[in-house]
Image 1: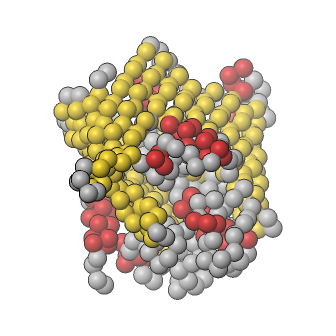
Image 2: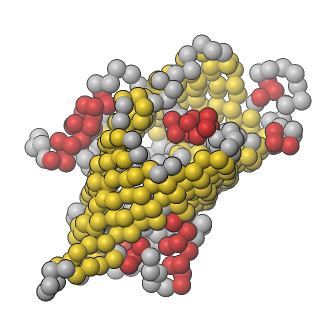
Image 3: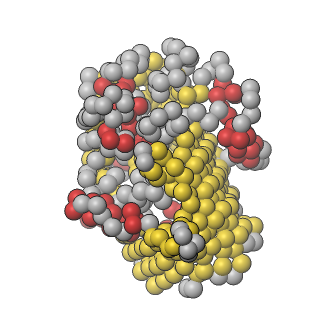
Length: 471
């Protein structure tokens, strides 16, 4: 197997993940940190950054990488449970010209082409607007949301609307309301919208605790829910809506429903355990799941699922890389690509140490037996790996690090070669050094995007960013 630079990058990243002495937690460390610091008082931060970013832009019908210098202003305000963050970034470059000193702004960041582009362009300047934190009785977050979860995640599992940043930013919304806020624990609601400008990916879950009136600790906490989710335009992010490259505009609509339960069993300092299950309907396609999960010593989470999926059913349809695979999953959902039903599995584990400053999450799922390992289009008929690793500032003085690896199309006969093959992979890495108020970060992203036109499906984004924090 020829080791190209892309495969070499994946090998180095996988070695970094595998050689770590521990696994990481299922919960995002940032959320825990926010929860600790969001009790009361006023916090104000202002970052001013200089750096460079590479975009793939259409030049005479050809996607060409162009590097722009960046200047950014990012104020961040937190008052108790309320938080507001802005991201005002300007891209510019010296283009040369006859005099060698022509100066150009990237107008696509600030100038809408039509009136319908105004909201999609300006709303994302708000990086986030937040009240509360995930798990609170009242939680609202507007802007960039990268962890949208409904119920057990059998339909929507950590969906992210940030995959196309910095080229494209979407302004979404997560809203949760639990009846415990009004001392009425019998009912609750979870909702999500991926892009408020067009309302494309939308989901909601209504749940109840019907036995909350009982004094029996285990039984009174059982939760029963119903979930609805849809995608009004699976081809929204495809160039010219022509995924099949046949000159015909592709259109589609995704809608699904489901029911679930969550039954906590144990919750001690040493060990916790919950049972959960789902049944979901994607048109006439049906799937179900039974699972268990919890924690050991509060630092090692675990989760196991047994999945029973009918023909053309896609578990966790709206997952973390969904925006990249919208048209691929729609082919299975619509029946254009036949995907036989199967019994499958999911396993997730990890650890989080030093107050969440060192964390690694590893999740692997797939069928027990593949139908056709040679089919590289069927996203259902192969294993899927997701791994995330973080070292937050403070664990190693002046250093912070983040790395992620998400990989589809891992076939069992060629498991390890496929694991490092960049086909179907999304790779991200950030390494930063901070001294006092100044920090320098190297950001790298390698993404296989099946929605791109032509034979080259790769998007590479990299940049060197520096910032000063004045508060």
